Each structure stands twice: as structure tokens, then as C-alpha cells.
Length: 445
Image (spheres, one colour):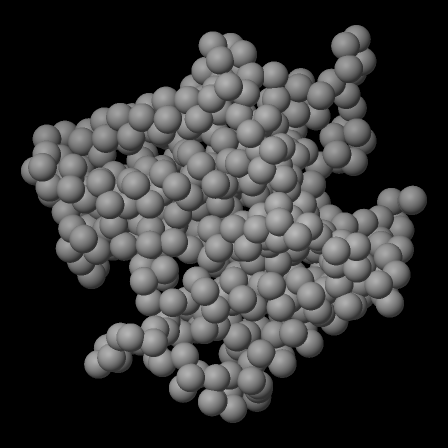
């Protein structure tokens, strides 16, 4: 395949173009107001809860014409774009379409379950996507007709390109050097420590697994694991294990950290910043930050947002490091052409989307308009990720995950790495936000 053909036939570039199409249509939709491009999102529902304005009974949602219109739009857009992508990659359209319909139905079940009132408070869709996929693959097995749609990396890369639009560089200015010190200094140090601890002390030979776990622990769990896993060629089973461990401990930290922050007498801005820098999932960060008050919630979200900007940079350097050092054959020099060939192109899409949002759309409009665009894009990103994580589950056997644990070494890698992360983040938070050395910033609530 020539370089020119790769632009419209390779998975990486196709993910970029599909992501750009979705972003472009969303921008036009919001700026012109000519049509509604919103994808389907289940409102939080329950059969038992009543009198809560934020909880919409499931039957009421299903009886809404808007619900079905958005469902049809979501299916048409996703199936259309991914089918074209599969066709350009040489796949059979006749086999891919029925397979995608089956995968989409499973993804729909995931979105439904994860929107239930109790489940929605503690566990995100990534957990349910993995569980449902794993249940199918480890019980009845994945039917042959469904396998053509199990294209994990394709969905992941597309979702990350779309996600790039939400990563605004303007977030840096909101918390200035405080946020940079907490998110951008601590994070690389944790990654370096976990790489050393995993490869040198624990002697884990699976290096893509180590770096993927390090990124998930130090940045933002699921999204960082996806990007870094793709950049280092991490196996699907390894990625599944990393995400599973991250999700489990995210729930634990989400509950415990606010309690510990109160016990230590940390101010809301210190507690929120600690949570933002150490709790993996953005959704869990909001929940845990809210437990300490409005100011803590703002600080937590700002730190996590600044940390999220690192996703693309980390994936870039991981791809470069693995190409020039980890996967380099002994005695052979790796040139620029090989680095470019191995470099995951979807990262370019991620950065371009972020730059367009930060330096074109935001200056042309305002933050509320960008927020409205991101509200539309967020659901398309989530649908792509749900398709990806369901695919991971469908492609994974429990027996394979157990083998990858390497006698518990992987679990120790996460636990020790997260403890180091919490200690280092706490030191940074105290130095920057205790008021002993620097003035305490005032955040808009």
C-alpha cells in the first residue's frame, strides 16, 4: 500500500477522516441551528425513583418521538461512516452491516444499563461495555457473523479524534501554573517511576502493558489507556485488564479520597486538586469533588481537564519511544521514515481537533458555543468508545486475563504506582495551594 493509498485505506487515517466529518457536521449544526445533530443519550432513569427532576422514567423516554429520532440518527451516522471505512479497508459490506447491527444493539443495551439511576452514580459505561462483552464471549461465545464488526482499534481511534475537540488549551489559563504544576509535572514523574518499577523491579516483560498501566494510573484511566495502548501496540487482553483494574480502583478512590481529605483537614481547593490529579475517571472526579463542596469540584475538574491535555502528548512520546528504543532491532538505526510509518496517525487528528477548538472556533465564537458543540460531540465519542469496549469484551476470555496477571505483578504495579501518584500529587498540592509558599488562587464557581 502506497503512502497515498494509506490516506484513504488505512485504519488510522480513516479514523481521522471520520472523526473530522463528525466534528464538522456538529460545528455546522450548532453554528447555523439549521438541524439537530445530537446523538442518542439515555437520561438517567429508574423504575422506582420518583419526584427527582433529573430522573426521567424509562417508559417516558421510550414514548418520546425525539428518542427514536435520535436513535435512528445515531445508527445511520455511525453505521454509515464505519461501513464506508470498513469497505475502504477491504472488508465485505454484506458481512459488516449485519455484524455492526448486532454490535450496535449490544452497545444500546450498555447505554441503557449504564444510565440507570444507581448504576450511573458509581459505574460508567466502560464497565458495563466490558462486562456485557465478556459475558457473551465467555458464555455462549461470539457468533461468527458478529466478528466482522469487532474492530476495537477503529472505534477507539475515531472516538479519540472526536474527543480532541473537547481538550481546550484555554483550560491552562484558568488555573495557571498551579494546575500545570499538579498535572504536568507529577504525571510524567509517575509514568517514569511506574515504567522503572514495572520493568526493573517487577521484571514484567510485557512492556506495552506496563506503559499502558502507567498512563492509565497517572492521567485519566480509560482514555489514556486507550491512546497509550494504541501507541505501544498493547494487546486487547492487556488493555481490558488495565481498564478493569482502573475502573475498580476508581470507584474505591472516589469514595475514600473525600473522606481522607476531610480527615486531613485539607481546604476545598487542596482536596479538589488532589482528587483531580489522582482519581482516574473524569466522571468520578466530579462526584468525588462535589462531596467536598462547589469550590473543590471546580478545582478537581480543572486539574483533570489540564491533565487530559497530556493524552495526545503522552501517546506521541510513547509511540516515539517504542519505535526508537523498545521495539528497535539490535544494531539497526531507526530513521524518520520508519518512525512516521509506525506513528499512530489518529494522534495527529486528536491534536488538530484540539487546535481547531482552541484557536479557531473559540476565538470566533465563545465558550458557551464551544460547550454546545462539545455536548453534541460527547455522545458520538461515547458511542464510539462503547462500541470499542464492547468489542474488547467480545474479543477477550477470562482465562487470557488471568494469564496476563503474571502472578499478581500487574496488580502490584497499579497499587504501588497509584500510591506514589497520590503521595507526589499531595506534595505538589501542598506546595502550591496551602498558602505557605504561594498565594491561593480564587476560582470561579
